[in-house]
Length: 126
Image (tube, rainbow, N blue to C red):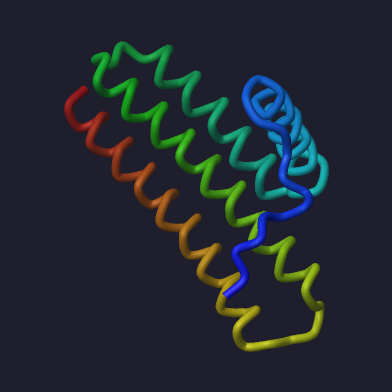
């Protein structure tokens, strides 16, 4: 078993935090530029959160809606990362590659269903 550290590991302490922030910003930029699904989820979040803030909803309802939209953004980032990693490995059709991509897609569908259910619950108590 190889326990060696990656030679690409970053710094520690404050420098690591600065580097990690930069990598995260790069990730958001890449997602926005290269992933139409990410842009669509972000636009849905802007509209949904805006509507939740405009409607006279209880604070718990607003919080749940905001959380559901941010969760969907997080899931889409992970889904896009899976797709990019699989495509980097090989563009050939492979059953495990398809499974990985399908699982990421299923996760996003589950987060969108969750969002719809939360909207339904909140609006039912409106």
